[in-house]
Length: 109
Image 1 (cartoon, rainbow, N blue to C red):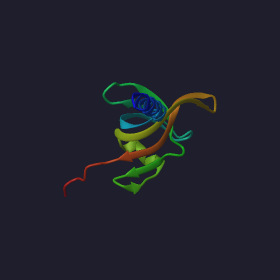
Image 2 (cartoon, rainbow, N blue to C red; image 1 turned 135 degrees about the vertical axis):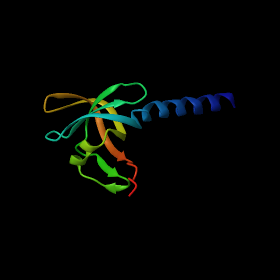
Image 3 (spheres, helix red, strand yellow; image 1 turned 90 degrees about the vertical axis):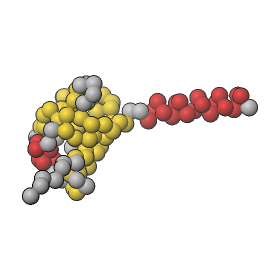
């Protein structure tokens, strides 16, 4: 029985380490490149910076679809990130953004 539990725990830890490459967290938006659709973000608690490809990211503002150009108006975003080193047009990237969500508070009238 112990061997069975040990094998299950090893499989579980392996699965967790593989899936940790995709993260969803709050980031501060530092810069937006409209031509290449790249974003430079900083993770809020640790201030770790990432240069991400956001060309194929699904962007939503308050649950509604939004355009890439609208990102400039926000400073804090929630991003689902696939962290892996890649290159786009000779630029070294830290990963790609698969989903960008923004929740902006409604202004009182």
